[in-house]
Image 1 (spheres, rainbow over the protein chains, first blue to last red):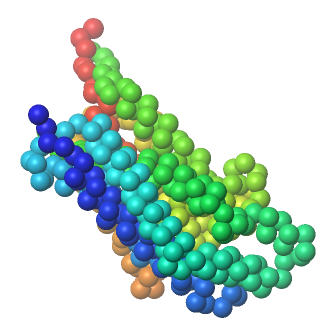
Image 2 (image 1 turned 120 degrees about the horizontal axis):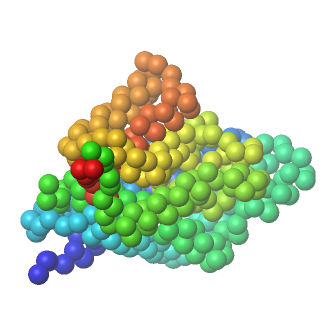
Image 3 (image 1 turned 90 degrees about the vertical axis):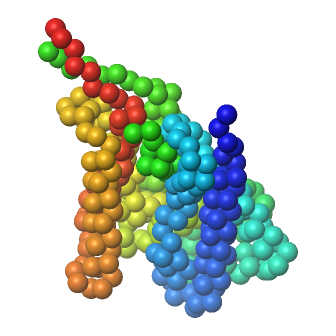
Length: 177
Length: 158
């Protein structure tokens, strides 16, 4: 019987979940610490330059850990499953950290980011109609539905990307070839 | 003598194809649905928030709406999808061993790193088109790594 892959999934999910949460919360603080100038690209997004694609490597980390720790080979289908579970659990961990931070530790953070975005739009000197339309696209920062929509789409996309990276990890680290 | 293909892991291949297609559709952003939006507020942007820097200056636009990922990333996802679709045809033309595909992928990673670093240290200025092409090479080579798992070339006597 093959050993369980869950320890590898959880270790990798914790790694990417914590990195995503730190990136997300950190970029929000970086954004509000700067004056809104009307620029479309905020300083907080510079975080992405440093850790671009970091959320995609969960599948590779998990499959490598599982293969090396247990000295096993497994098919790419198992790699896809390991990667997908890593991505999904990673997003959940990131979401829980984010929720704890923005609801308990710093309840004003989401509102501050929203206010910054509104001020940034005003700095662009948009016509009234365009401004009204732009504001209608901006989700209410305190609403839980906003949080669940953001987490839901991240679950799907990061789950798929990590399933793909899990397959590649399985091919590289756990193939019988 | 003619060649035919053995198709393995059909369910997984179909899931990979559907999943990648879904990724590309989301990555193309709200402009694909002619849905005007302001930067970084649509669900497509939130979906790729942790996977791409989403810098408007380094992204393509559809219907005046920025794509949800940068030029390099849309190259990666688009080429991965193209690679998945082309896998059977490529295998039919020439079956290549995994280690060669792996070296090709490492080569494209190094090419992308050189491009990023060269631009960062102002040795040259890359463009959205050059980022797209280099991303495309990486995405395509990554997809081909998996081709031997799905398709095998069989030589059949007539």
